Length: 239
Ligand SMILES: [Zn+2]
Figure 1: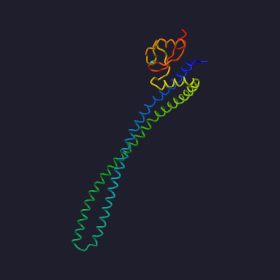
Figure 2: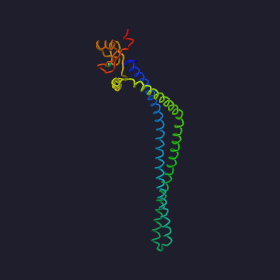
Figure 3: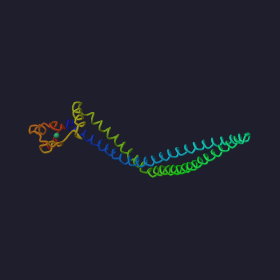
Figure 4: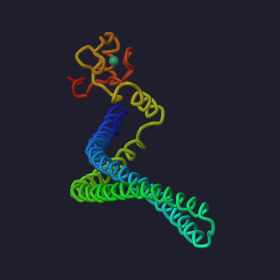
């Protein structure tokens, strides 16, 4: 039957395997982020272009409505002119028509400008759309490759986690709790081998009597400074 130390070391080995796959997975993130960033840049430009196009179209539509309103008003005035009898009233109406014509001419100039703006906004939006499509296409192979790598890592992760969980079951509950408590702390791992006469993690000197206990009784003791579980390999201990 394996000793507590052997079982714990086995568990730590499995935990290290899981952690190393976790790191591989994490290492994929910057690559995904770089792709996302490049894509969101062109997407932001498309959103801005679309907003500009909408605004320009609204202005154009408003001007069209306004001009149409003037046109109807002109028509009514012209119709009225036919029935006007007095010369004074007729000349007043003519003056109104003249004024309205010049206002309308101004609005029409404005409409031409707004139509130009719509046209250039349409061009910008079309170009942005092409850019988004292009970037999406260019990124296709990289994204596929990243996805495949992630899937491969996840499959290994699943296997490694299952193996780790199997080993966990073999560790006595209080010992497992001790092990997990250290692992959740500042040290990346729980078990550290005695390094000469010092803790293998924080390299603080370990009192002689504890060193002796670790060697002679093959026990696991926590470092009094950093708290990791200290051990001596049985092979070394038997020398
Ligand atoms: Zn220590």
